[in-house]
Image (cartoon, rainbow, N blue to C red; front, side, top):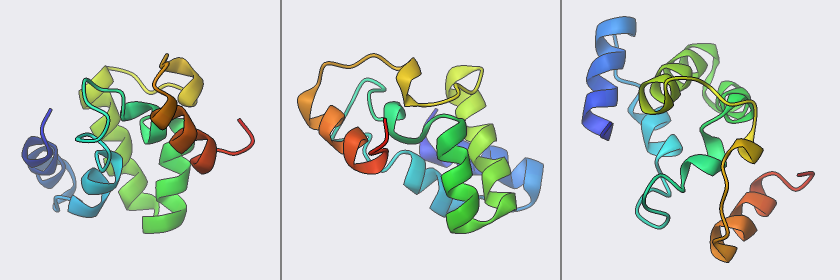
Length: 98
């Protein structure tokens, strides 16, 4: 789903579009196309990070965004396979304990 539709969905559900959440979640979509960017934040650990950064309401918007994209919310980045070395380096920088 594109960023505009995510925003419209959140506006209908929560009364605001949470643009900052969608921008954060999909911030690497151009750099890592075909859904690879989802390995960074499209999971429960990503939602927890968004809650710390933007608040609990934003976490609800993030969960909705991920459900709209995937149909479920993975626990963490390990759900997503990737052999892209640039993406794997970014994941290691964001989630160093992984």
